[in-house]
Image (cartoon, rainbow, N blue to C red; front, side, top):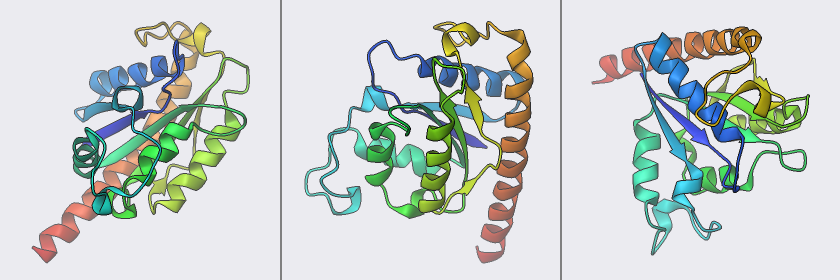
Length: 192
C-alpha cells in the first residue's frame, strides 16, 4: 500500500513537520507499506485560480503532485492549528484536484500544536474536509500537543509515553486503509 503524508505547514521554523517525519519513520519501521511525504512547503502552490484539469497554465509541479496523489492508496493529513483551523496550504492543495483523486480512499487526520490541546479544532475541521472530498475519515484523530517536547527536528520521538497514542492511531488507520484497499482491489479484479 502506498501512503502519502501531507505535510501541510509552509511556515518558517514549522514544528508540525517533525510529526510528518515521525509518521513516515513509524510506517517504515512497523509495516511493509510505502510512505511518501508530500511537503506543501516544497510545492509552494500559488492561491488556486482553477483546478488542474481546466487550468490553462498549471503551477510548476502540480501535475507531479496530482500523479502522486492518484497513485496513493491512503493519506495522512498533518497540519498545525492556525486560528482554530488547518492550514490554508492544505485546503489550497486539495482544491487544485478533483474529488476523484481522494474518493474512496482512507484519510487519517493529525493535528499539531505547541499548546496542550494538540490542535483539536484543526483536526475536527480536517475531518470535515475529508468528507467533502469523498474520502473515508479514520474516526480516531491523532492530536499532538506540546510538539516541541514530543519530537525532535528529525522526527525522533522524545516522549516515550506518547508512543501508545501513535500506535493506537496507526492501528486504526492501517486497519481501515488495508480493508478499503483490499475491497478496491477485488472490485478492480471483477471489473477488469
